[in-house]
Length: 177
Image (cartoon, rainbow, N blue to C red):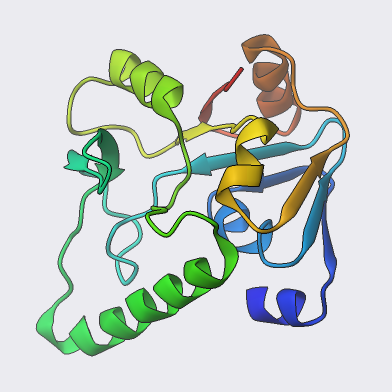
């Protein structure tokens, strides 16, 4: 679906919410994305094992930059699923290589502030998988080739909490100021 959007140079429009996989793969699929006022875009940790996306163990992982970040841990595929797993990983790598600016990009996007907040809130290694975060638009230009335009980015954690409540979402979303 992402390749179809990109191939048609479609403008992606977020009306209500775009979470996790939508943010990682659809929001940045084409040349431009537009987030309407009152819509929520939030990322969360996907499994490092795409064949098993619902693993719930988290681990501190060293990034190529040398920094550490909390990342959902791999569950290692069964031997009979390894070939499928490798195909998915190759497809993901190709997808991001075409759509991100930084060659060291690791999904999902975050920053030092968000890592610090998550560490302070959730310091143990086994966490609830319904943790998500916004990413301030100032970071998009250095991360993605897609031009992401917000009609109105939330102004506070209270605004984000109100959006989550209005949308009846069962997750904690951390605001990136």
